[in-house]
Length: 489
Ligand code: AMP
Ligand code: MG
Image: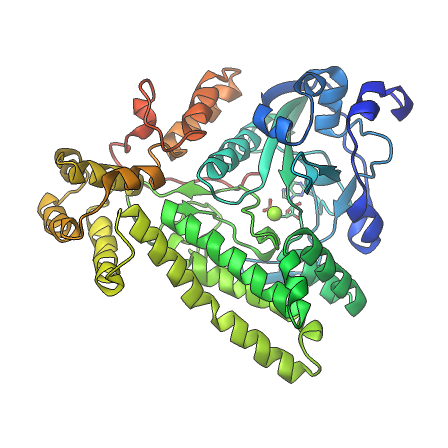
C-alpha cells in the first residue's frame, strides 16, 4: 500500500517531522518492519481522544498499520533516534533506538506537541545484534504500569495501544511479538544530550537545549541564563518525579541516563515494580545484581544522572569552564534538599497531617520507615489501613505487621496530630499493579485471555476509589517473597 492510497489516514492524522527535520544529526530515517498479522490487544480510548485520534480509525486496517508504523500519513518522517547513555554507571557512546522509532509529533487537543513512538518495530542501525523486537508480555506490562502511573498523577509517557504483530519473537522460548505505541511529551533524554555533547558540536547541544526549553520548560527562557534556567527546571521536574516514585513505592529498575527524560516523565518500563512488603533495599530487576537501582538509591542516582546532564551543557552555563562547574555544582547541590522537601510534604499528606509542627512530623516519619521495614508491612495497604485506624478500625492495620505492638505505639503518637482520614484516602491508592497480579494477567494474556489484564487495568485506572468486585487487587500478598522481573526485551 503506498501513501497515496492511505486516504483516511492522510485526511485525519497530521504527524509533524520536527525532530527529524531539526535534528538530522540525531535522527536516522527508518522504517518499521511489516507486521504479518496485526491484532489490536489494547487501545487507550481516553488518550486517543486527548490526541484527537478517532478510535474507529485506529481500529481499522489503516489504523492498525499506523499503530505498528507500516503506514504513516504523508509528510511524516519516522526516525530512529540516536542517544548515548550511562548504563549501570558505564558509558555507552552510541545506544539509540535499537527497537523503537519516533513516527513524528502530533498536536494534542490541548495544543501541546506529543511524540508518537513505537517500541518493538524491528531492527535499526542501533540494534547492535539484537532483534529489534518486543514480546506481547513486556509491552502489555509497559501499557498497564504507565497507565497506572498516570492515574496516580505521576508524570509518565503514555501508552496508546499494543498491537500483536503475528510474528514470533525468540527469547528463552518463542513468544508472540507486539508493538507498543507510546506517547510522550518528547523523547529527549539525558542520553540525547550526552550523544550531542560527545560529537563536540556545541551548537548542536545549544539547539537541543533550546528545543528542550521550547517543548518542556518555556519559563527557563526568562532566566538571566536560559540554560541555567533549563538546568534548574530539569532538576525541579526530576526531584518532583523521584519524590512521587518514592512516595508511592515505585522502583524503576533501570535508571540509566538514557532512561532519564528532560521533560521529567517516567520512561522505559522494563523490570520495574511497586514495593509490597516494605524494604528500602528492594531490587526487582534480575540484571541489577549490585543493587545500584534499589528503592532507597533512586534519589541519589537521579542526582548522579542530572550531574551527567549538567556536564553536557557546561559550555552554555558560563564564560569559563571553571565558572560553569561552580555554578552547576551549586545548582546540583540544591537537589537533595529539594527532594527531601517534596518527600516530607508528600508524607505529611499521606499521613493526613496539617502543615504545622514540621519537626515533630519529620520525626514521626523517620520512625515509620524502620517500623514498616521490621514488620515487612505492605507499603500500599499500610496507609489505607492507617486511615481506617484513624476512623476507629485498627484491626486491619494491626494485621499487616508481624509486630502489632510496635504499630500501636507509633499509631498512638500519630493520632495526637489529629489526622484527617478522608484526606488520606484521596492521596493513598488502594489499587496499584501488584507484582503477582500483574504477572498473572500477563500469563493469561499470553494464552489469549485478555480479561484479567483488562480487569487489572480497570482497577489501577481509578486507584483511589475502593470498589466492590476489586477486592483481590487491594490486598497484600500473603507471603511477600522475593519477586524478580526480567528486563523487558
Ligand atoms: P532499554 O533497556 O530498553 O532502555 O534499552 C537500552 C538499549 O538497548 C536501547 O538502545 C534499546 O534500543 C536497546 N534494545 C533493547 N532491547 C532491544 C532489542 N530487542 N533489540 C534491539 N535493541 C534493543
Ligand atoms: Mg531505554
